[in-house]
Image (cartoon, rainbow, N blue to C red; front, top):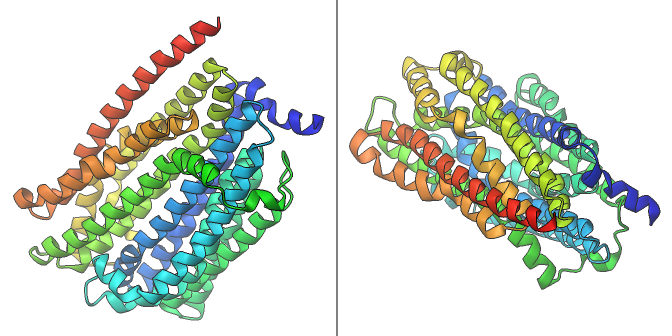
Amino acid sequence: MTQKKQMTNPLGTDRISTLVARFAVPSIIAMLVSAVYNIADQLFIGNAVGTLGNAATNIAFPLSMLCTSLALLFGIGGAASFNLHMGAGRKEEAPYYIGNSITMLLSLGFLLLLITELFLNPLLVLFGSPADVLPLAEQYVRVTAVGFPFLILTIGSGHLIRADGSPKMAMFVTVSGAVNIVLDALFVFGFQWGMYGAAWATVIGQIISAAIAIRYLMHYRTVTLEKQYFIPSGKVLAQICSLGMSSGINQIAMMIVQIVMNNLLKHYGAQSVYGESIPIACAGIVMKVNQLYFSIIIGLSQGSQPIESFNYGAKQYKRVKDAFLLAASVGAVVSIISFLLFQLFPRQILGLFGSGSEEYFEFGVNYFRAFLFFTWLNFLQPISSTFFSSIGKAYKGTFLSLTRQILFLLPLIVALPHFFGIMGVLYAGPIADLLSFAVGLSMVIVEFKHINKLEAELA
């Protein structure tokens, strides 16, 4: 018991800057590597198959978002619940949140695999696939669906491992899947397997990562995971879902917006010089590239989560505020740098994903510069959303996770094209970013005033 207690003490005693670096840096590296090997398919497919191949991966992407949503729901929810209970000294209850999370990650992964294989064609049509893209999308998803259970377990277990005080191992679990980059080159260019090759490379990488995660979870450090902890409990799952809801819903919101956007780009693209497929292909590339930037922001928010949860449970409120402010400050700097890159070098970035027509590059450059115009404000919404969930304010975190995608972006991408055509889709992005930043900032200011009162009461 003494050893296990010592393992949790640093969250409440070490310097905040040291802790954020210790937890956030491995998380950022893991998220970056994950984004890189997600983008690898797009790079290899774009150069080997072409614009239609890029469009196919974008059509398939909502399913990856759904996997991530389920993983974050039970990964972040389980981790936050575990850390809150450990910080409050309720160590007998804490293991149930880890065990129940693992059970749900695996169960939902296999359920999603089954649903996807049974209803693949109608799902891809629903996601906005043009007729000439559909066969390539079917080839790709038929294989990648096999990896859904492994993908969900890998992403979710990363948070559970980080909650155990092992951020480097959480990073290693994700980084190990980067073998798919080598396999992409071998299967796509070496064996010339096209979409199938890229898909199998992805699945193999996910299987390797999941195997390493399972190995670690069998030897959890701070608590011993016994069989009874894995039996689903309504009470336990309710708290897990409440704390993971904001992150999970944020991904669901992104998925819904992506599906609507694909259909709108297809519809309004057909009425423009770009056609149906070019806007969808460009949107996929811009989204994957933006994911590189966003992975750093998500890594910061995830890295600060155990620190915020533990210290809020232990009533060390100054440390909670310091962890949030440090994550937000670093996020702001990263956002400004990303904004400059997207504005100055959009054509060069597009060129990495293969050649295309002049219309292809024209629309892609417009997409980068217009849709991502307020990238420099994008750091606050995910960091503050995770912050509220970390301190047990699940309803606030959930609301914030809905602001950009559902409350602002979705209505805008539906309304603005009526006035501006396909460019209306692009104009919706910066408006939604600005509004969600304003809401997030105001909510954080109010919450900090409340935390200051709690801190004063303890003095």
